[in-house]
Image (cartoon, rainbow, N blue to C red; front, top):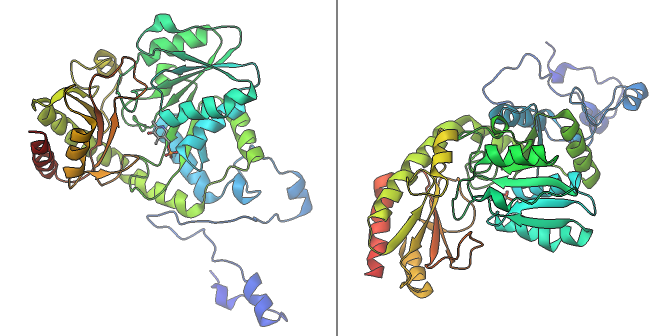
Length: 393
Ligand SMILES: *Cc1c(COP(=O)(O)O)cnc(C)c1O
């Protein structure tokens, strides 16, 4: 194989020769990591190839935002993880949610959304899409009699479980009802991460993930994915993404590719730690309720048991009603290993107090605090909780 140095430079000026020197051929180089490809421009061999370009195909390269070897590789892996046939990357989990809405909804359409949906999803709907003439209809995911389909219902949104109050809905039954009513279904699978359950086996049409959380797992990259088994839906989503200029950076895709390699192991570690912490917290007299789908008293526990092989590392605690916001804030501030911040799925344990004003299915009578178990030794996290809970005594 000729090395690039030996390539003929002909009569070109040195700086032109530098620019036009070919890259090392990728074929023949085999290593653990796939490498990072970055491009705005990708070259066509001739005009005939340019005229044949197909924005929906993945067997060639057209322009950086359409895809690179790195983004196509990550899309193939996310599709495999979710048991889907097609995947599309977005610059954030929230953007992936937005893209589903933008690709599928038109003025006059209705979208059914759970009352306890991820708060940023709800504010996207009410703050932006409502002004485009899209009707947002809320339903209680734990009470199927609240599902109201009409001729205008185009899409039903699902989350399993709710990411703050942790109720686990009967996805299979809700998806079946929506499909029977002629509506498409999309599920925010950030919690399940492709590990705990398969949305497509439960009858969902589209799965969305914030890869930001467990897939990346490192707390330093923001990315989303949309997966589906339906080529027609994929085509609509991909065209919408191209029209809106949706694109992810090669270095970020490489970070997520790296994260995916350890995702199953990390997910189970987060799961085990979280379950240990919930047991510890449930025994404390200041705690009224621990919200985690694996607890027998949890809303939707039987569905979780039927459909899931694991649980993520997020859970919430509702304190006894007598504890004030200031007292619970003092508990949160006293934690040393649990850091205060948004997101979850990274190596560092996180905590946030949502108070009593969460969009819950039933009004909260005590302060709600959400935890994300990181990858620290579980005993150290238990000790941290114990010393901080002492502030409440
Ligand atoms: C974090 C999160 C999102 C949004 O992901 P970003 O990458 O932060 O935009 C969407 N859904 C759920 C359930 C989340 O936890």
